[in-house]
Length: 470
Figure 1 (tube, rainbow, N blue to C red):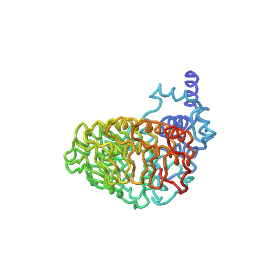
Figure 2 (figure 1 turned 135 degrees about the vertical axis):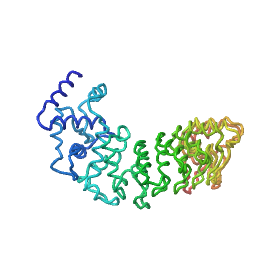
Figure 3 (figure 1 turned 30 degrees about the vertical axis):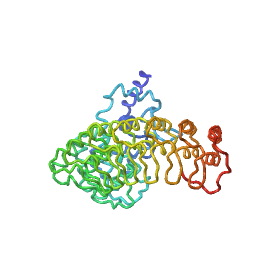
Figure 4 (figure 1 turned 90 degrees about the horizontal axis):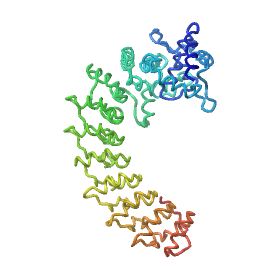
């Protein structure tokens, strides 16, 4: 296929007028884009002419999809199933991967195109609270989400100038809303204003050179929180941008432990996402309190345990900077969270820690074993049941035992494990009189019911009241 591609590329470059530029630009965008394009946004991407001095979207300059396909000499097509533009064959991407110099600084060019589009008058005129008609600005979403990704890969001088132009009038720019919402940042009660600054944005994307330049300009408060209280350092830590984190914590005026409105510090955000190198840097800061909980009482270590980030938990435990058994406001310990989420390796790590109580209950009386049984995590249940101090039949506040939960949810493997343990009563009722057998039959788990019968569970007519506990 290589010879055929070489010949086709030569035909693209030998076309008349603007067709060679359009053809090669179209191939560049498909190969280096962060996501597949729909036809409309792809055509708008190809309509932007860098350095032309044009400040408005010109509909007459937007090429048709048929024109672009013609310029590419059949190397691109529109997928009928997804309605997205793609290469004619996957081997074409391999062809260009083997020829990295086919395009000159593609990411720098793409960043410049995105920033040019965001600076267009039609885009700037859109309110951050509006819902723009996608037919008018179909390229807006991509530019908002990915200009910084391309700029981080290769920041040209022209892109830097375009960024500064964007940031000079950044208050309420619609791209901010698009960016934050895509990141799971709830904006219902957040009034968009200048609180998400250019420095926040540059830190969000982790563009080292840009963050450094903005700080040197002296126009930004390095410790300022955005509308959710996230500082530039919090964003860099959240997204794992080590170089930016190291730069920011090296500034004399930085507060590396400033919490957001939820009480979550930069360290909390780094542990939440599992960014081990960032965690190490933040733990090295004298002002950082490693065990500082958020407003729900959840510590950085507990958050890492919930998400299964074993490397982060190992770092914090080995350094002795956090309490591995500290409960949150609901009484849930790191082990409780790890067991509930089904992280076998994390449970093993925490069980090896001194002073970790494997039977510690939350405010509902549920132990780590209760959580593992409820969710059917056989590996976690096995690890917990190997500990002699674990009570396998300990009921929670409503009298439901681990066996009761496992039976109700049809977790046959966990039921077998529990029935094999001495001291587990297969007929233990909860406070409403429902036994594990009654729950299994009520919810249609016949194999579990048969297991219980084989272990002398007493068949009883199921209780009629609704049982909604999970």
